[in-house]
Amino acid sequence: MAEAQQQPRKLPYVAAITDGVREVLKEQDNAFVIGEDVAGAGSVYGYYKGLLEEFGPDRIYDTPISEEGIMGVGVGAAATGCRPIVDLMFMDFIGECMDEIANQLAKMRYMFGGHARLPVTVLTMAGAGASLAAQHSQSLEAWLCHLPGLKVVMPSTPYDAKGLIIAAARDDNPVFVVLNKVSLAMTGEVPEGAYEVPIGQAAVLREGRDYTIVATGRMVHEALKAAEQLAELGLDTEVIDPRTLQPFDTATVVDSVRRTHRVMIVHEAVRHGGIGAEIAATIQEEAFDYLDAPVARVGAPFSPVPFSPALEAHYVPDAERIVAEAKRQLGL
Image 1 (spheres, one colour):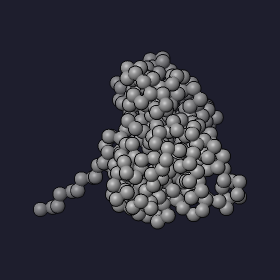
Image 2: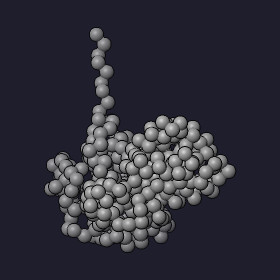
Image 3: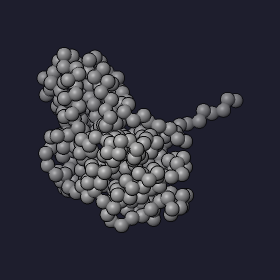
Image 4: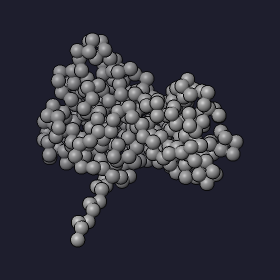
């Protein structure tokens, strides 16, 4: 009798993060994890659990509550030959260490003529939906994308979370891995061993001929739901997950727009000044003659994230809002 085919291994998003960090620490002797509560507690969301016991206190460091100090250690360690994994518990806290990020981490390689390498991987948790209020629920990826010298990735699936962490840690430039707290329990296929998801390469998750949706982070899953609803209206929708925001895979998006002639960009961050505006401008520059309708954007309103669960649910974009905007854009 033929041997039963082995089923693909599935892990939740949170475990895929652990798996990715573990593979990096096994592969790179000069890699270590530093941050608040990363050792004893395994981080506030538990995605470093077990790594202290596996790799020891010389490689998994708890720190005082000082994001400026944590990032400063990462910058200094990288410049002197290490490959640190820096944990910033919530993305909202990048404001506490923005000088280290903007004026040191992003610029040192340039300012020293390429002689200083900064292979720093920064893991940080973004997004609303958990009633953590205005100071623990933001999506600030546009801040980072505006800084030359940084790379920014946003994994939407467990597979991409592990693969992008490994790719980030192998890169000789600083890379921010922007994770999503509401996605932590989401399960997906995650192979064993080390693999990379290439930085700068988008994924076409659903092919279509009539309409393109470019969605980032958790909004990828809302876009896929919306695509099913739009299919009922006769609209065959393509869904693209950029996976990397900086550098951005312009070619994949522009190629799609040239075929579908209509496009929407969706992100969880505030719509005004969000990364969607940059993507829309790029599409206008590269594919204007192919557009049959203005580029649409869906994002959060220009407001701090509310604490109230009812208000927060209204604040965060979802499939219904995507469908409504598509109908408005196309006059359906």
